[in-house]
Length: 366
Image (cartoon, rainbow, N blue to C red; front, top):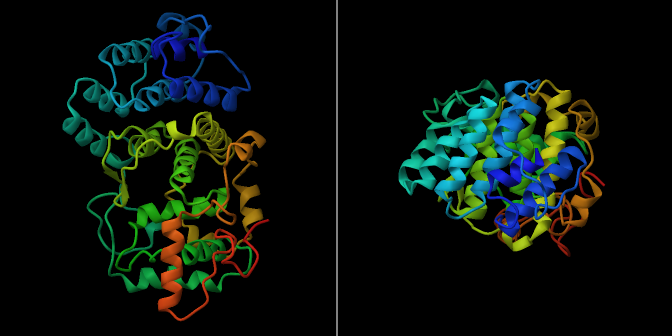
């Protein structure tokens, strides 16, 4: 598989530094196998297909995803690279909507590729779910709901959840960052807000780097390979710029993997590992389609055991992965917004550990 990854992306010596460290980090996180991309013998599409002939199509599709990650890390995708990936996909007998997207990008059809992105994968197949807790009809997955007092009230009521419960953690997560509750002006789309529960449950902060980790986790935890489009979205937003906006709220902010060297590659790979283990042990449920309010009173640690949330690897901690409850787990903008919201409400600002010098109580989880 490693030989195929390297060959698909250009062969030894042709990979960018970011491609090389990312594929190596993902492979190590998922298999425990380390390799040197500069000297690895190539595996042809036919050889890979033969080696994986006993694997089910969803599993083979995940192998295609690693190749697509390598492509999406590039600001411009060469047509030759795209053709090689298509050859591997054909040999494996699998397809993914993101392959259509990268084909458009390689052809220079940026606008068409972005349209395909919106129609493809997870977002294109999404339908409104009761787990979002809103009675508003959503025409698109990432529609914002700004005038739903009942919905906002459910989120505000999380303040009353027991200490160290998931709901209380989400309340503190929102309060520290000054986030508006779904159903209020300035809030995130209800579907995007679903991922905030995951931030708290799996222990990631709220910086752009942490968003890459969270969506990599969510994509791998879902048994439906089309959820890969969520990871493709954040890579396109926060590294290569293939998207200018996404998820109804995010705006492009490029270079967050390449600026960190191999550190972000390690963090992303570990998030994929943790997500895969979560999905394998919980029937691959869609973490964005869960009624988290029904679980809000439960202790976080109990839910981590139930969802099989394994600890972060030591390599990820050393590479800078942080929780929402420690320095670096919140962006400066979010901290300022939280402080402004506290001042407007005439209350003491509490970051719950995320902003040094601005906390007064213990974080949700040690």
